[in-house]
Image (cartoon, rainbow, N blue to C red; front, side, top):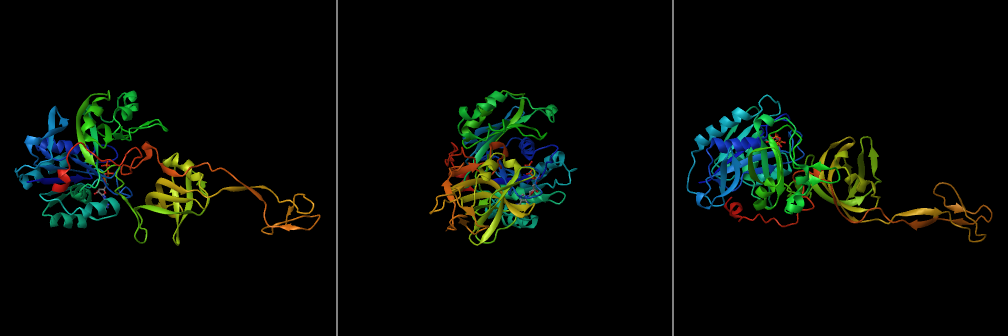
Length: 449
Ligand code: ATP
């Protein structure tokens, strides 16, 4: 019988990582054969109290040893997983005690914002809870009741907010999925500069075309390496799990202490909705409309414009972090038809959609004034007759309404524009992700869940 274990909110900005804690849980449980992959599930990227990427973790126990395959290595021992369940039934109380002891040993309790939660259940909780947590704001009591309806058990520490992520992670039934292999550092190196060969990272995407978000060429940034002092050495994302171990081994680096492949919702755009009614703060939307004001750049390099939607207007912000996407935005003019993707948040001038990507659907014609009109009688250039009053010929007193305009070629093309890999949200679909989600493995887990 399957036992689902979800855990979240154990780390801080200064250290630890819930994915590492999960590897310690596997060790503590004495390397059970997992049912499916461990999961790294990203939730609503707009919530203000996340530490970094709002990631929640889970594993499912009781995979079938006969059909198991290797998905990681911890302390020299293999981590095995199977897409077939076994009959073995774990004692939920024992699992709760063992997993709690790992959380109590490793969670960063000293940090105000660290509020661990643990969810254990023999049944998968209602998948609707995942969709609410990836798209909206939910509370701990909702998590508790969804979990108890599935017959599960909760354990929380401090304010216990982590129960939300813990429950959402085990309730996820993938519509699409990707994978990430995480390699971890030896303990004595934590907090020191990470050593890996940058040239190996540069060629990663061409050696393994099903991996994504490896290197940001425009900002010369290695995206597989975290910037925090956490135990992770690097993580390689891809939609084909079967190549990830080889991709990891192709990176020359300091010694790897352990590694593990996770199934994730990264790159799926699961957080985005097309609004059905009023727009709500901290939700992410896809909206189509017409640019209704010329883009304005404010101090700090943030660019704003207004979008007209049916009978409404919404401020759209391309913040400094979106880097070169701002160049595209500054080239928009009123009348352009666009689709925008992003999270609705409070901004410097009221609420605004924080742009993640932009599609230019139809460009408005750009015409600039070339000259004043000429008098029909004498042929000389006419003069302005005052604001909004057209033109007149001083000599002949003839009048004309409009100047001579010429069409100017626009500096952007219609098409889809995203942010560079180093600024992209974990959940945002990378342009290199074709719509194929083949994992190289069967999908029984989805159906079984
Ligand atoms: P890391 O990426 O390093 O794991 P994090 O960004 O995931 O860190 P957490 O420390 O896990 O941040 O904090 C996020 C907190 O927000 C957790 O307690 C989680 O349960 C909670 N949470 C996640 N999604 C939602 C949501 N939709 N509504 C309310 N709370 C949420």
